[in-house]
Amino acid sequence: MLKNTYKSYPNEKGYFGQFGGRYVSETLMPLILEVEKEYEKIKNDKNFINELDHYLKTYVGRPSPLFLAKRITNDLGGPKIYFKRDELNHTGAHKINNCMGQILLAKKMGKTRIIAETGAGQHGVATATVCALFGLPCIVYMGEKDIERQSPNVFRMKLLGAEIRSVSTGSKSLKDAMNEALRDWVTNVQDTFYIIGTAAGPHPYPAMVRDFQSIIGKEVREQLENVEGRAPDLLMACIGGGSNALGLFHEFLDDSNIEMIAVEAAGHGINTDKHAASLTGGKPGVLHGNKTYLLQSNTGQIQEAHSISAGLDYPGIGPEHSFLFEEKRVKYMSATDKEALEAFQYCCKLEGIIPALEPAHALAVLKKIAKNYSKDKIIVMNMCGRGDKDIFTIANELKIKI
Image (cartoon, rainbow, N blue to C red):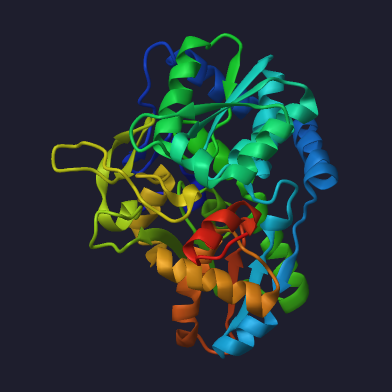
């Protein structure tokens, strides 16, 4: 039974119910505690908030627009469908909201070297961008497989001055990149700050990343009030680690009348071994410093995830999502590679918006469920990334030469 409001989590030890916490080596513990102490100090500090707000407005381009997708609304014949267009942020995704907050924290802590992990490359690009802005060296760990399928973002990171370190262990994707970044951090604790890209990892990262991303939902509340005079009926977002979904949901978690749906990557299908749906097909375990739902074998070995989308290709989920799943506050559904690819093309042709493959998963489910809602309802979907980075993947899947 929920003891507090949803927005009051995590507790002082970093737990969302039974999920979260701090499962790290003794070497890292003092640094993690320092990050927590400094974050708690600055998160309500007016000077820090004003500085972050300044950069979000003048550099990132916030607030991002709330767009009524009229042609999709008409085509689906049901509720009004709005896109929260975070793909229009500088760097092309929601990731920079969090990176800007964390780089300012790193500077306050006197850190002079920044590391990050990336899957789809959007977090890597955003980290490289803020490092270039503030003149700090940047090292990005990226799986060998993701380097190949996200070559436009790899090139962008290099242009921005980042060093890309290829990871060839395990599945050669996001999980393994995060493993290597954590190893680096342990070795270089004195001068290095690790900018984690999603709402996962050891406390305080899941809460900190969520807080920096929560500007998305705050803007939605104000923008929808201005155009519709009320709050939404349903919020939708894709989830890999889950930061864009929490960014949209957090503001509304305690509004019990507002539904929320998060969409996992079903890959080739939930009944196959080629998917990334940690909540649908996983069970609780510990990975990357936190307890959460994970894809794992009966003996506890982490299983490889699969998704056409590099940003959703992760065998775990942020711990707050595991909590919201067990509380049944958020409904978790899934979309296959094929469904996401179809939704991608649908959005391009009907709205003139080329989405990333990640939010295309959310759109795929939205297409299925829209008929269940009447015309007086309002759905807001987070368009968390744009599809420039996916053009080679899409072209390969559609067998189109470019």
